[in-house]
Image 1: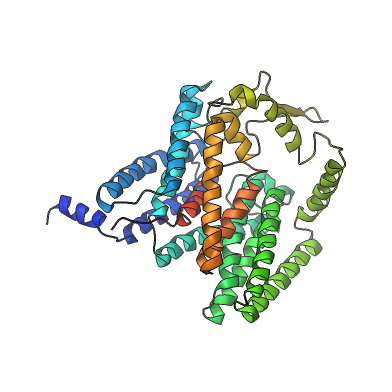
Image 2: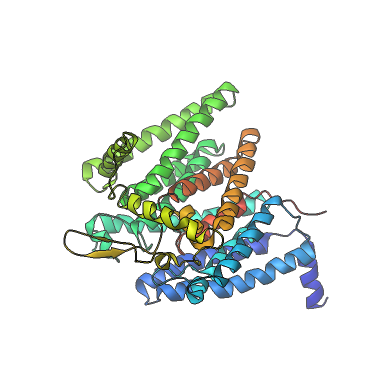
Length: 440
């Protein structure tokens, strides 16, 4: 049989195994790229540029899949296409097309990187078998656990294993470039692992192992001291409580659910007490501060330094939204959106300039325009609604886990930024939640 016919037969069939292996290779490269940046003098810009060859290969696979595998069009695909088209328009009207294509300095998240994310979502959406989805999720969680162990070394000063200065002031970050970004990775993994643990019905040993994994990711979140991640996890907990009440009303495995929920709750309390007593997290002090700021804002009082100056950034960003409403200032061109650079001058005369909105949705609105932001939000809403219906009817532990990770990440994104070492994993999770159909 000729090579051409072999390719045709592969893509005509429903063999997803090779595609899932390829996606795992992507996950591995994301991890290895971050590691290389930390220890092998591989620059952050090189990590970003390295996604472009993957993007090109992804596009070839997508074309072949549509030619031979006959992938059925999904309504969500329309909004994915709109994101691409709006991105092209944003690049055309950008204040700096070079930045829009490759990303700004230190961030390097331009149009090519966004296309890479979108291509990962599409490829992941073609993985329909739960077994193969579990493979991919296992690698996402596995590399996340390595980050957690490295974070323990950083926070507890074991062997002085601290690759970044942040670790020196008590915040863990693994190989990720910032504790806040590490927190976004942790809440993604924590949501997935909690969902799988709570609704897994297999062997007791596996159930215990899943609980330990949950606690490790929760420890990672606490060590990051990322309030954005904790807010995301709070919403996950709130959803789980509501879901538990629903299951009790419907009398679905009530005894098993009570036991699993109780053990998880007690374990979370024990881990929290451990970090409070050891003083190896800043999270609970930040929670107290955040709660006080929230109360003040409800009473009509506010200050620019609320939310670590996020209120200041958002207030000034909203003012310029009408100016760039249609096509945005340009992908990753947030710094150039202002007539005068947005900055904070601290009491010691140091100055911090802002090149991100510290809100993924506001960032997309300013940089890519209202149609791009709207398409993104609708895509997320469609994923949320379709999978909410699935977990109500199916109670599939893998779907519940992916859904919780998705929700946690989307919530923390309101206070955080998209970065090249974490965002691709989120888009893969979105793809695994797509629930795509194939043509007969």
